[in-house]
Image (tube, rainbow, N blue to C red; front, side):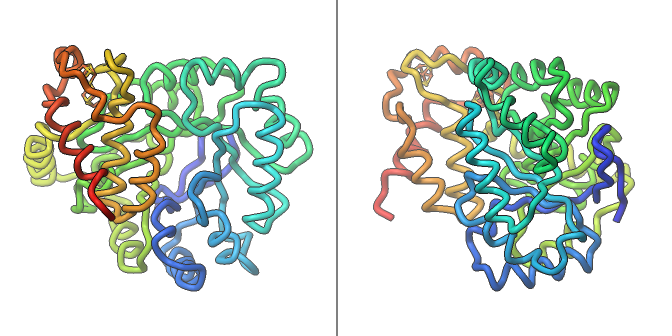
Length: 335
Ligand code: SF4
Ligand code: SF4
């Protein structure tokens, strides 16, 4: 395992970290033994979120008696001071600790980012918790380039998490910006939400970028942990570059990179979210969670009026209208 400084946070992290979404598929006891394997393989960076149902709690149980082996990072969708203060307390309780090394603002829109930094916004609670020693560094996670760009200009942002994989490379210039500014960069969805399965290619490619502090593949089995950690350290070979280009081409016509260029949709559909939830549904094995998130969208894919505007904006020429129809019918089938 290779270890690097996470920006200027003072935290020394394993370059392969643990993405805590998929443990929703297992139970607390299996999470405990999964964490034995994380230690065996040198993984110290643990990512979770308030929004990942039981994930924080399972992790809390798994680190009992060995808290010092791990760097905990969680995140909250709270946007106000009061809601964030409550979420920080809940995270501390769930994780069974009195200190969380990294607490992140979870995927705000530009408008929500303004709320976060407003006088009674979530940042107030984060700064207070930091001053009290309840949390260490403050970070932000994003899915859109405009939020990533805005976060780079916020002096309180110590880490940024953004999707990065062989098919989602649109953040590369901003990842370099993180490196220049000493902001830690956390690569989420390195396997493109489950669309890739070759660890050497998927992880090798992003770890080859010196701007990436840590990549956080979601994992729920010891074999996955062993396979993914064996990639690091890794030098990307010419034959792997060839394989990567081939894979990228194969996925190119159907894979949404969540860049958001297709927005706004005439009917108000959050198009990239439909594809994100669909990946949870179809590829992560999190059917119920993916479906419930889709069904909670205020405007679902069947609202599409086929105006076609989004397709003229998509740089990857995705057949968005047809894909939305397909996803909606998959989500609407009886479970
Ligand atoms: S549909 Fe196209 S434009 Fe919209 S987020 Fe996906 S890749 Fe980007
Ligand atoms: S074609 Fe459908 S999804 Fe695309 S902009 Fe029009 S209404 Fe929205």
